[in-house]
Length: 95
Length: 156
Image 1: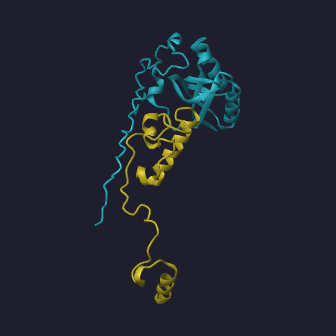
Image 2: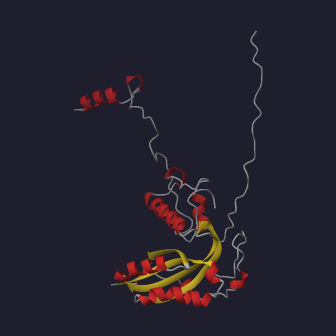
Image 3: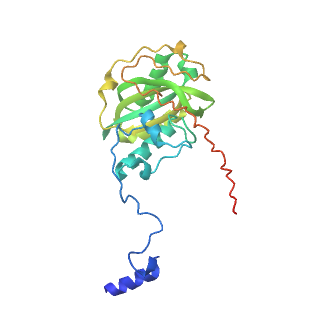
């Protein structure tokens, strides 16, 4: 069985020199991620804190940058979107 | 089934200048009309809006906590949309009402509202509100355009 998998790996993956694990095109997401907890509550009224996680173009920063857990990243995205709807944060551009 | 809700309303400053208390009563009347029980209604802030809404660049935020039947929420949302003085509204579930919501509202002088095109932030002595825009990160990236390295590579 194992030989079957190794054969498949060597065929499908981009293994270098035929040996070792298949080479990944991109780094594994969150491989050495250090989880960060939010310093302030992630709610739409906390505009000054939310603005830190918005890029100059108004885009929400990814988990790679915020280092939040999945749950907190979802809270952050929701809070930013709610703040945008009520006119506290811009959809495009910086505040 | 009764639940507690939180509603943030963005009010038109043209209406606010005509009188704060009558406008507040009119907006909270939307909630009571559909059987809502107002727990707290306070002015949250008067500030510049992130983008123009109905030709307005500034607005006054009213934060209302109320308890209402779940079936009445749709009607309240619809009535807020029909209300001309409410530019935007955000109605959310609320687990518990924060203690700061029960503090008495600070005096609000509607004549002190800056003109619509002003950038000034009117922080009218609200004790529970310190989330002003101190994050004014207006630093420009220094134009460190590196001079092109014009080192001649002369091969001999």
